[in-house]
Image (cartoon, rainbow, N blue to C red; front, top):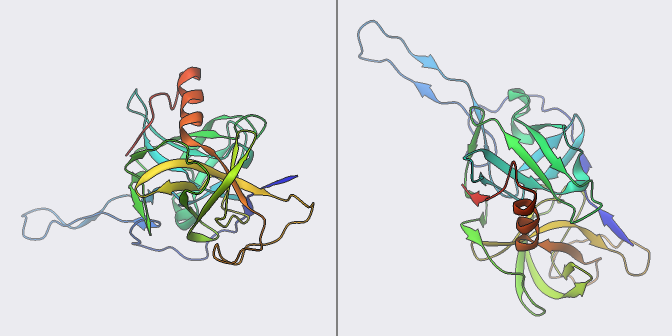
Length: 245
């Protein structure tokens, strides 16, 4: 049995004016010293990168795998398919005041490779490669047993663990995965190698993860990013030819 991970997010009670990497950036255009011009405040944008928290619809919180551009130059992002259906509006968890910043263009609903493609509004989103300890500069192949991978999500944060092996087309690792981490990136160095999609419960009982170093917890599972990207390219449309921002 496997558990998909998403969680419920409430609306923020206050607006954060500036938070690099995961929050809201307000760009100020100062007219100081320029005759006839005053200071003007531009519209705020959400700064998003791999592992940033996103809210799909009004209540479901998941993590962004990566953000970048497709072959047509559209700003797009990836997350887990079970997080939301196609057509669902997307907002930034740390910048809910901005409102809708994108829409789920495609989702397999968790019934296939469990991925979704988000079309973002480039006027409302500033993409970054680094969020916290996670940097995504490119893509790497699927890791084999014994490799060390690092997972990052809006719920559990950043941690690393050893790859245990495979279960069908899923890769199991020692990394943590708890509700809200679904869609988060799995990396080796600065290379994205997979998308976190949940945890396996081999004995029918979910054992929560305290830390990756603590061995007794249900293992994380993810699918390799090269497998997901091949599916996106084969489908064509939004997301095809995806590359990191």
